[in-house]
Image (cartoon, rainbow, N blue to C red; front, top):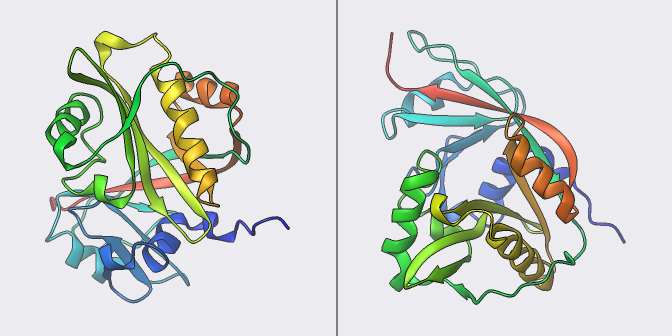
Length: 228
């Protein structure tokens, strides 16, 4: 029987009500990740989001509402819309894994943060790695590539932080890490998905070659707490 995909129509919301409710800041029909875990929020039932946004903005400077356009508090700048593709895969990827891929632990935390800051600083916060399992490849005792799990619902796990150090691109590390992560998620009885900016044509082509298909487009509304 096919798994219903309705949770993926509002993935931040269902993540915060399913697996990550302990990491949620709850404003009723508006919920956000605690800013230590991620800068994302969502809402349901056409909720007036202005009060929740004003409260959350006291905790973090820049953040995102994922889904429909939010209603903004007075004196806040209009949110900036980014369009992302949600991509999904249901089967194991047939790509050879030849590198030694390790599960990252607390002992790898500083290495992970250093690599993230170099390539992917805006979305990855101090405890994002605690939302799921992260995997890495080391070369000469240096972490050069990672991939991990972020948002999780009862049936789906988001692949995130697909990062390769600029000095080590072109070696197939991302393909191997994605393949490894997809297989790990499938073994848990869940379905892998991911989000990618629609302008990132290189990664989109990579995901398609590995077997991901585009499920839908999403709006990511960037909000700044800096008032006009």
